[in-house]
Image (tube, rainbow, N blue to C red):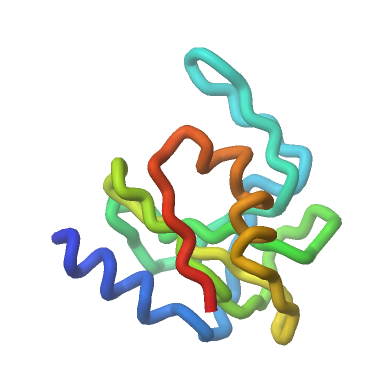
Length: 121
């Protein structure tokens, strides 16, 4: 997938409703080589849709404060990673609004390791 294709793909989801699978629910601990990461929000993917890393396209889920296995949400933002091969989508319950600052704060637990720019609706 080229850079242009990757950007067009994630932009095409802004404002759309999608059903996401959650593989890292709130409280999930992801052990990395040099640190571990505890997820304060639900994190998942759009089944069958592949992103720039050739894995299913990832989605942060805001505004759902208990672990879930799947969820229908509205895509409210994109986390553009300037130093990685993939971007992340940000979803929320349909009709729920978050400011750009709130989104950046919510996904910082993971995006602090990347050069990320948030594009919000």
